Length: 263
Image (tube, rainbow, N blue to C red):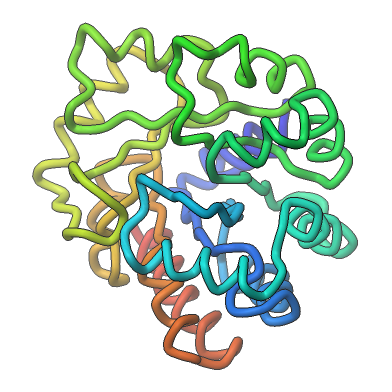
């Protein structure tokens, strides 16, 4: 059982929904990023998605793209991103960390070496948005053998014919992308999301977590009511971009977490 599996089991026992927070590693700089990440569990975050900055983030909107650029300009790289995970593990051995990004930096490092380093650093799962199920032998299956969950994205365009392929070899949870398009582009609507979550649940026992387009505590609650939890990324990253203090960012995160937990 991974930390992700254990977290969902604990939440289920408490009859609570999950709140997942995404932040870009190294944004706006390493020290501030580390302070934010280590503060997320205390703000009510159940699972941390840690963005791995990349030069060509094709699935991300301007907010996440700019966060990645700021991080890269500040010298953030794969090693420093794994170091943030190590630092969190010094004080927290239960909150799952999911590394989210693109395949190129992993491929450049070498899959076997990367997986060994990620496992050692305390990473629990991977979301690699540009590796489809047809490429499972590249990373997904090796990751699972290493003991890492490989989390797949499902979208409004993932029809019933495609869905079984997407769910094959997926573990930890399914990340349902609530809108078509890039991150931060539109608002998620519970009325649209609910039937889609039900459709996916008919084909898997994995938790379904919904992300993209969740920007307020009210929407976090509404989405969590029709799914197993909510993910917020762009709205948090936007606060960081505006120069909010770490305390203010974490206070905002807590309102989002409280929203999901009240569902």
